[in-house]
Amino acid sequence: MWVKVCGLGTTETVHAAIDVGADAIGFVFAPRSPRTIDPATVRGLIADVPADVETVGVFRNQPIAEVIAMATAAGVGWVQLHGDEPPSDHDRLHDLGFSTIRATSAARYAADEGRLEFGEDRLLIDAPVPGAGETFDASSLIADPPHRDWVLAGGLRPDNVAGLIAQLGPAGVDVSSGVESAPGVKSVDLIRAFVEAATSGR
Image 1 (cartoon, helix red, strand yellow):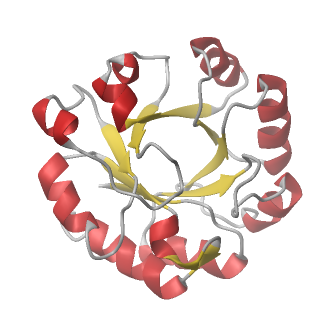
Image 2 (cartoon, one colour):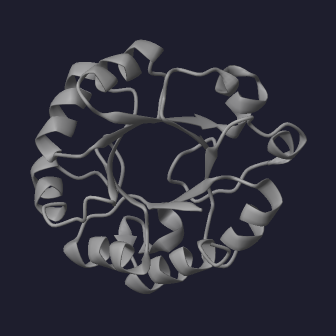
Image 3 (cartoon, helix red, strand yellow):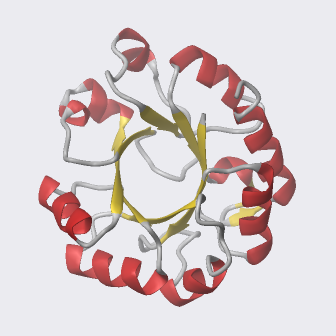
């Protein structure tokens, strides 16, 4: 089970996620989010991150030139595109050495748009409003799950992640608001509880 803790913003929470066994840590560069952070701060936060922990910059409907500039300045190895970005954006990022995650909503997946492959390295299926902490109707995933490894996000918390993993069978999970004490404020205790619950079947 691959686990990503997203929307981090402090040294304490970055270290908490890594120490408890998270496989990836994410930083939000999309505007108008309570978790938005600047590239210079992220570069400092990931300076001593072990090489086997993936560092992910999250973007949403931003010009590809801006995505590349910010991801490069931050020093992340992965870029998550969480909007309507075309396959060519993934191609450009790959050409520059980045790995990519394409995020789509469960509704888009059900409408077939999400089943398309854009050349991404990972597919993430989320709730309709990313970062809102809302679960979604998973009937489409139960009836016709992706025929590839995929990552589940949307409304995940320490108390429900193990059950949803068992029900839906993703290869990974991604959490943000589910480990917060207030919007944009991560809890070290909740991060630890989430990762431990998600990886209990490893």
